[in-house]
Amino acid sequence: MLKRSSVDSQELICRAEELINAASNRYRITVQVAHRAQRRRYEEFDSLDDPKMKPVIRAVIEMSDELTQPEIIGE
Figure (spheres, rainbow, N blue to C red):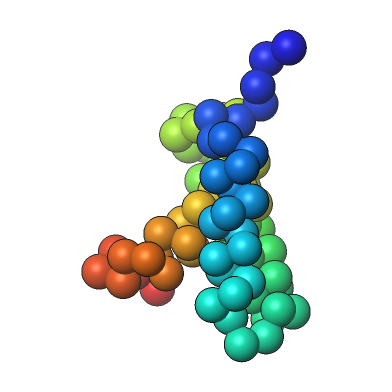
């Protein structure tokens, strides 16, 4: 069976937990991830970055990177 994503599921779970633990409000961080995923989906519709990576997975990874590496924050 082929993997749909190039990200390990354990790593993704750990990154999502980091985001939730760092947030003061679980609902708010969930909504922020959803909005970023939706925005990225439409902004990068024609992008060929990683077509197998779902927008939500990409949003979680980006936001967790921004959390651990504040120098890369773009927004």
